[in-house]
Amino acid sequence: MALNQWTRNQKLIRWVEEQIALCQPAKVHLCDGSAEEFDAIAALMVANGSLIPLKKRPHSFRCHTHPDDVARVEECTFICTKNMEDAGPTNNWHDPQLMKKKLQSLFANCMRGRTMYVIPYCMGPIGSPYARLGVEITDSPYVVLNMQIMTRMGADALKHLTGDFVPGLHSVGRPLNPGEKDGPWPCNLDHRVIAHFPEESSIYSFGSGYGGNALLGKKCFALRIASALGQKEGWLAEHMLILGLTPPEGQKIYIAASFPSACGKTNLAMLTPSLPGWRVECLGDDIAWMHRGADGRLYAINPEAGFFGVAPGTSMRTNPNAMKTIGHHTIFTNVAATEDGDVWWEGIGFSPPEKLISWRGVPWNPSEEIPAAHPNSRFTVSAKQCPIYSSDMENPQGVPISAILVGARRHSVMPLVAESFHWNHGVFLGASISSETTAASSGQVGYLRHDPFAMLPFCGYHMGDYFAHWVEMGQRLKHPPRIYSVNWFRRGVDGQFLWPGFGENIRVLKWIYERVAGRGGAVHSPIGLMPSFDSIDCGNLSVPFEPLFSVDRNEWQKEVQELESYFQLFGSRFPDSLAHELRQLKQRICE
Image 1 (cartoon, rainbow, N blue to C red):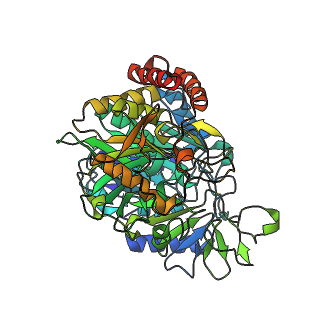
Image 2: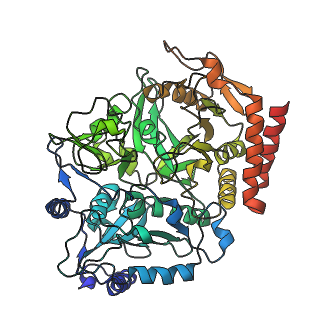
Image 3: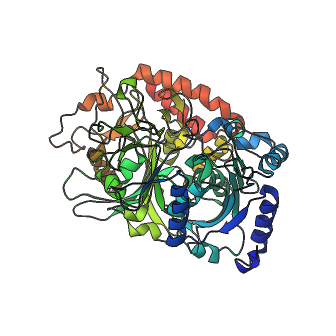
């Protein structure tokens, strides 16, 4: 293999040669990111039955992963640092030397009989001073297709790959013996490992074919590795959407917002406003890299180029822009399929047809009360297909952030929206987030767990240091964004949602816009500044204002006690400034 004809980056050549010697693939394919390459790989997958064309959606496909390989596996995800303390109490730690020995054993001959794909890619606009380059080696053609959609992948990235890069090695973990036919979705459930080495900025993933475990540019690079890089270099890698918000008459502002996976980031990023004249533009639905600009403001880029969105619940009512986005050139994973060549999932907005193929690839029987589509089924699609795609997504300098939202899925306690008193209080709000779990990660769904800034599964270093880094970022900003907590999911005594959500969330964004502009009304509460009765434009909505914004002191006393216990996890690395905010909250609640 004449790698020197492909690149002059000697570090890259040596690394690829080492992985070829280790994994022993049948052949090697150097990815160029072209449309012809995509079509050729897709055709191979169609031929072996792992990809099924959709007659109703041009250039679109559906596929299924192994039934036990359908989500992130946090128990198999490790942060490998020399000092265990540096990984922190919220990560699974492993000794890097021992992990490397284990990985060497796992990857030895793992690609026998398979094609090794070498994927150069760029996270962020190519040429941006804030973009980073990576190379993923994989034996999964599914990964190649998804990485081409989700990143700036191929020849353009390779041209800029002249120095350092983040290496990532992935394998489904099932070699082929001579004459053996491959199953459509191979994996190695007994040996799944997703290992991150933040001190050397490298990633190894073995045994899983699922997106979040296999698309190494996504959570692995863009959050776990990037968050550690950002802490060292003075920037932030966050689990946040980015949107542009423009009123009928006024100047556009940009908002970043963090929510745990499957809690509405994509819906908010692609919002169709219910208020006339208001306009939302989408710059990203999942990840933001944020840095200090020369003017003292916080700027953000989206390192990704596509959406890896949750399908169930997506409909023309909840997210019409997403439905328009996925009308063509889309890969659907673990959704149900109709007899006439389309897709279906729970919450799509219409009843399932009589004959439906479930996400497991067999006829669906509704009497069994098993979902037709997996609750974490996904669509992968280019961001440029979104009707409200913003060209600002390609701005190499990023966009200035005026407001940051930290959200959660809570049926009680948290009000619809509250503004922090100041930056450190806003960091405290983000650090205090608890949310009900979803199907985006394996394990029990619906229980409450702490998820600071929606980064619990994605912070690549000690979370006490992560909080301190947020505090320090505020000190370096002359014009820091305002920070808000939001909760679209509060329920009444009857168990029903109090707020209609979706397009009506523009009413909350309008209040935030007015607060940023210095004219929105607010009242003081023990937990932050909340909208005064007449400052939220509820129009003809019939919503119970008081239950949406009530602060139950008994509930909040329990919340404070829980936070006191939780923050002890971080020991001496928990910032004194946030401990002060907790004491202040306790005092206000008890007044």
